[in-house]
Image (tube, rainbow, N blue to C red; front, side, top):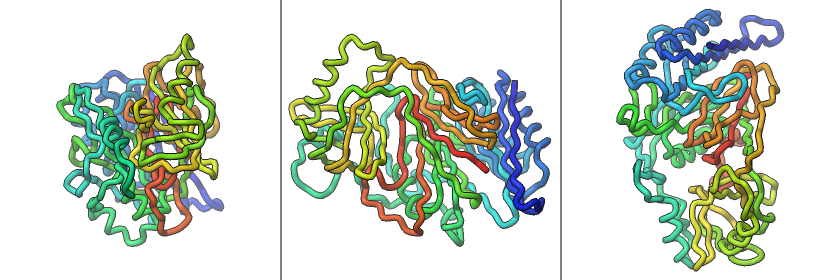
Length: 425
């Protein structure tokens, strides 16, 4: 019914120097019972108290709106901690599969460590670059593509927007931004500008976030982001000064439908010309060769690879055969000389592999045929949604130059079956 996990790191045999992360999950069909089970697990495992305790909570949308509205207050009151989190499609079990339930990650910092909860919303100057109204057939990314392919000159990309976003006082008051090593958050799908400013302010921190499930038919909210207050949009999270963490990304279940081709000409997020001709006609030719092949999903994806071997995967969101261009689902810029390969989902099965006994965070992208976290442990915390996740790698320098490329800064991912994992030592 529920799982418990505990990790205490002791350095050089000194009990005074230890970090404590506790993960707890429950699949009880009653949210009240599931919450109680997780709280009891944390209480039993917790060996000390701190004024900076935090608890990250993921709850599946299978529970009632009234019960979900109360979970933050219940956890805060009974565990004497700060809470943030969101509603998800499913939580991730210790077997790696997605199930209905509650998943919690509790952190009790050392005296010289800190954990700072925060919220960033529209009131902080955030713009909604991806907003699509629920129930409409309007695709903002595709519409941007149609306008974009008419441009032939001009240095400014359609994917870049001026930003006047301001970080909240909780984050700007951190005396030493380089001490922040992990930022864990939950959000709506408008994360791009928040990621950019977090990358600029905290370049040495790994970033890991999950896009919450949309909940208008559950409780009338666009999203349900948990904290001291429940927010319908924005980003809620915690900035930790703890050990160094490095996220790992996996894109499972994708199969190439084209050769690897060099990008010759592009603009923003639009591929205009490849080494063998215009992008749209080359993709159409590749798809014709796939006729009769069984697919679990008709959507198209593209793996973009840099000259240094880094790769990112994006959904193809539009194409214009008349102009030869193809738009990718990113608010960052492509560059000539990068390689691209078009892909589709296959029907192959993927099983989870146990690789560690450490507490592990896993965020994934739901798909029609389910989701399995590729790397599991008995101490799992995580969830999956159709909206996907965001991630950013810690940088070695205090300042990070952002040229707007798809390979600089943090990345958003909504490719079905993809996952990001991070070990907590």
